[in-house]
Image (tube, rainbow, N blue to C red; front, side, top):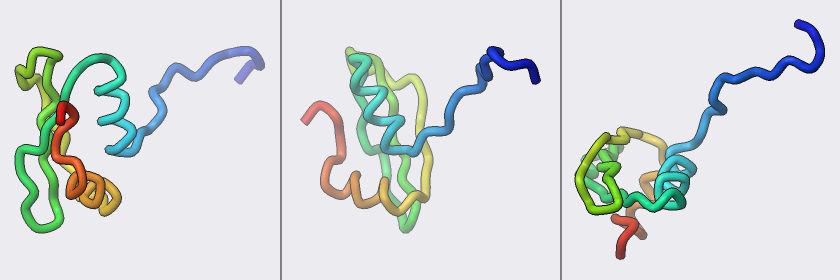
Length: 73
């Protein structure tokens, strides 16, 4: 690869980084369900309309969500 070329692939984010980025852009998120070792988080517009879901078994995310179940609290 020639020097000076950029790699435009998105960087991998942790689930918590995804939620923080979502919130920083004015949108909200809320925990939909937490069953066993899996969390399902709704990713919503700034007005609260769900547009996507984040599913994860990441232990750090599970701890994070047990302390904060939604971004608009």
